[in-house]
Length: 298
Image (tube, rainbow, N blue to C red):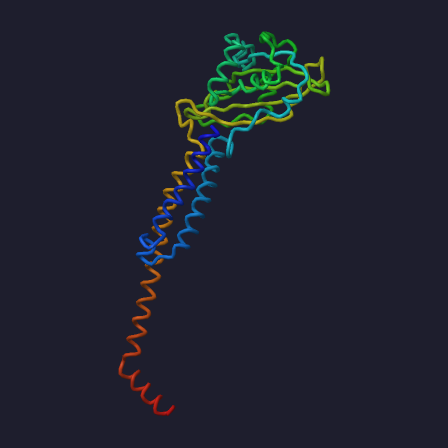
């Protein structure tokens, strides 16, 4: 992804350079039409910069990040011991309420392999890979939530869940992993990496949450979390570094067109004004007045 980002940035800069190269020199269109090259350079730079800001703004509005996905919660680096990794999902209980249960169709080895193979869809696997990198990942996952309180109210109470569009009210049906750990201070640290259902067409949320508690206690307190979105069969890959060059091309072309029209209009106005001035000086009464002025001066 870093390579693609670099290509996008280089492309946007090259667009401006190429356009300006055709403007400069005695063969350039700016020279032939007596257009101020400096003005076009300034316009190109401003438009490319604005296109960059608009691109990362679109990224933030759609993906919930400006430049790149946020890294895994930094507190994971403070883990001293991993007690368990539990795959979880939400189902309905007998009362029709949502409840978090163990996700049975889960393979720890497969999830880790999938996370390494596809970086875009590496979501809850991010936690697993972070643990593996620190050599803290257990060889097998746990299949019990006996030491946990009801997790769904904690997840819902975090205030992090994305607001879905109408018709997508099941977006809080989540699936992912819970990491039950002890941090360096000896406190219980519970990490959740969970993905939800669509919040609108093809658009899915991913959440990471951190809860802290006392070792040996089932009580947990929400500390912080983060959210970003991803698409499935949507516009995945349409990141800011893809949008930026396109906006730059369209913006620079439109800016140059408007600037050229403005310059032509300004020069035309000046030419008309100058023509009127010359016509005024050539009128008989004006020449007669100038004759008397010369006689008086002499």
